[in-house]
Length: 533
Image (tube, rainbow, N blue to C red; front, side):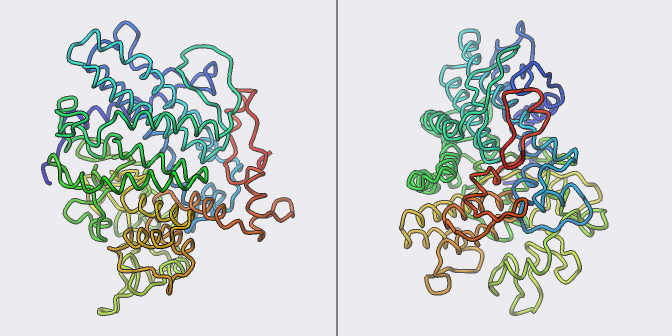
């Protein structure tokens, strides 16, 4: 395992180059491109798309762009965890505005994260890769058609993932299916159903091509991948299971729970085949110490791991640690880092309300010692308990004198996709299967759900998601799906003094974020989400 942890070869360096390219690209947009998106070419036309090295560098750049799109300004957490979430803000007015639902407030951070151009940089780069990378096959004999097919499939997955991300945030968005590197007619918004339909078609096609793992004995694509084995690639690139996880989430967002259940089942059915293969850490459910303290180097947050089935690592050993784009930047303080207090924390009232099971290993009072467990929260009895579930400081320590972080952005892991399957089974009426999946997801957390102690299966599932995935960017999107399922006629929100049910709130566009004025100014065919007009 140590050899996996300390690997610092070409793969990591190429990923670092991709991230740097992504950051540079996101600062050099011009207004004559679609939705203010600039070219994502990595080199000029005379030198690019010629060699195997070009193929690898350009693909890693698409990954780098998607990584940057999700974590820039901590957007993944600000959008997913703060809106009607569990965190209390200490002194940042912009974050307080998000918590209060004032998403059109005039703050630089809010303006930047409501600008979708960073995601369209991913779409454009992925489309360009799909269109141009096959040119290399005829020019470099080292770059085989199979290699190219697998690379193009990854680009299609990344593009589809970007579309899922944008639909969850803004609803209807422009649908681009080809690259653009010059002036052209700017596109209006496309219905989210059509966008997600396109993404689903892309993912299903890609899932037939990408392997379960790269650089090993996978029969779909055996042998080294760009000269590296699976121990180098796991957690870094998207696999067949990654495609099915994204498919499951698209289906759930659309309310198509039969497909969501089937896609999630495919992932769970194939989990055992990815257990300790080709020299990599296993794809598995992990216990509390592994999750929060990186016991045996198993944490999905501390290192790239097979458990990061959809996500992006910032592994310090590969030169990817950064000062921002990490939850710890907002949640940690002394004694973990030299900072007096965090920018946000979970209040004691919220903690005791959410974690109300005395046997919950994430947080409860130990019945033997009488002390509060510290897996999720440190110094519970203080005014501001520290949310320390995720704390990865460079080089992969849990505390230090420098605020340089290397935690992964984890979109999905085994516990998450299992809970999504439980949700899907509950909706389609398989209560027994839903309870089985729910308890499989929390088997290592010290609790168990039954029809007796948790008769409302939907409430139990979403309570478990709230606990297990706290700080992983899921809270707001889970609330949207929960309220869609419940279909309550109770007042959910108030606008201009008028109460709205959740359906009225959603129909008015309230579940989405406003679109940055910079986007609207650059593209007159784009109109603001109605709720924010």
